[in-house]
Length: 256
Image 1 (cartoon, rainbow, N blue to C red):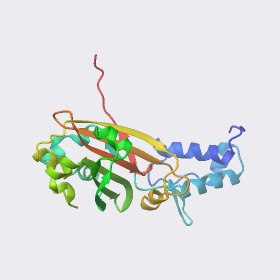
Image 2 (image 1 turned 120 degrees about the vertical axis):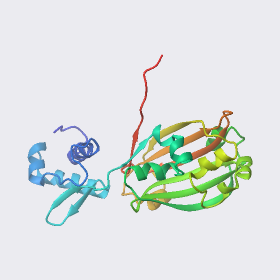
Image 3 (image 1 turned 45 degrees about the vertical axis):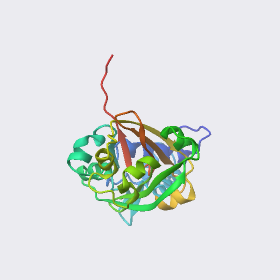
Image 4 (image 1 turned 90 degrees about the vertical axis):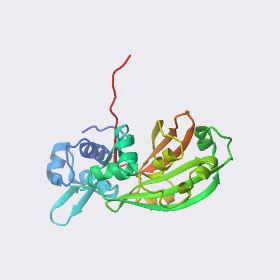
């Protein structure tokens, strides 16, 4: 193992975490005993123990008395950036996007509506909705849980004209197919969108509490802007994702 400036236990932490992420250690699998890992990395037991403690604090591993250290059992929800938006899910099957995606992967989904309100658009939201900063918008703030584990905070913003035209957006339950189905029925056909994804190293105290994040755990900021058949932005969603409970996947074609 490298003897560079980065502490040995942090190097071991990174290596073990990468093995979990890449599937070398699968969900539910027990890791090798500390003496075996120490021998592999060419170190004493102390930095290995520190690395394992750090991974347990971050929620990557769980320990079972007398049995060892196991990879967290719940694998991440696979978020397919194209298939999840197909009309067969939210229009024909009558399932909200996350409901259809999680159901296909045998997860149970719960959604808590945290707030329904008229608010001033921030510059970030206004730019994507193509309105003036400070203009009034309608927001739906939710928290979603996968198998009872918080995995996302999601705030959807709509221009007031659209919220007025689609009154279900002002209600806790938007009905079968979710907001996209109601927009479709009102003549605002969701046709295309843009997703922006970044990792943020310092979640807020509220995010840490609501997502049940371990110390020093980053979050994934996920912005989705949806446009209708007239290329008008009809929704901006600001999501904060638990980094261990989501996996992003995108298919693509090579075209001229």
